[in-house]
Length: 434
Image (cartoon, rainbow, N blue to C red):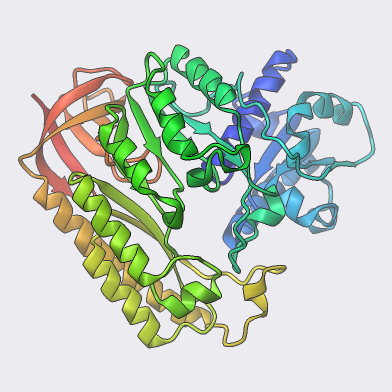
């Protein structure tokens, strides 16, 4: 069971690959498996709660005699360590991120043992090889992790404590993995990392991400390269020029900004300022007129006043992001923000979240209506028995964004089709083949 972000999905796919290589049988019915492995997220409270609920369900199946062993892996193990045994009594093994590739051996050992065990070690100083994965995404698109960890010390974030210092994969390794994915049928590569814009910095490669994109576009079979998790302060003129010149790097940028008020940004320990963020958005739209921008913001950060929230709201109206995710601030133990005064009550956080998302909803619906009559190339993700397809144009990332509903779709998943937008349905677009 894979929970959490795309980086967790990659880890789950790698574990599945290791399990398959060990000739262990993977079942589609986890409630009746000999061994259940749950790969967890532990970033914020809702993710922890989701993971603990999944663990409890597996333990209930174990108590009922349907499951023999329960193994918990991933970020929650890194965060709670052996305390996890107390939080969910009955777990047979916990597996840290550094023991990911030993999962098959750990399954075998756990299955034949009556004792619980913890497999934890300090985060590696290198990036693990993610090749030979058993993909749980559709075959035609995949995640490509180019780095691990983070050196930024945002005051609200637990990631550096969980995944360690920033480190890049070698360009050779990234290209080998991209080639493997393309040969397996992936036509869309979604480039991920905790901070993709810093790629190559630790390897002393100037403009590392730009140079990597120049190499990735040479990989046969890849049609779309999508950039996720770009740190705004590190988006350079060179990177923008590289994206503009590339025939394969889609004009879509995911760049979390978290807030716009300078005082809040400072308390968040973000290096950005309102002036620089606004300038970056103007620069991106000037150089890439068809750019689709996604961002995430946090409301209810300690000390956030009504005035500061309204400043964020007005900025959202100005920036008109095509896609936006908003999160309530969660007070995570071990982070500097958790010790800050003037914590915001949850009801105010929820009110601000709703107001901001309603504002963004209006913008998103308006932008969809503006696309009616335009032509879009869509990548088909699925087609139902009635011939209705679901796909995405370049401005829609898999799993997190809206989709294009393709009427009378004659193509198969993984194929590109030319379409015309005929209508908008909430966040989705209705298109027909041309």
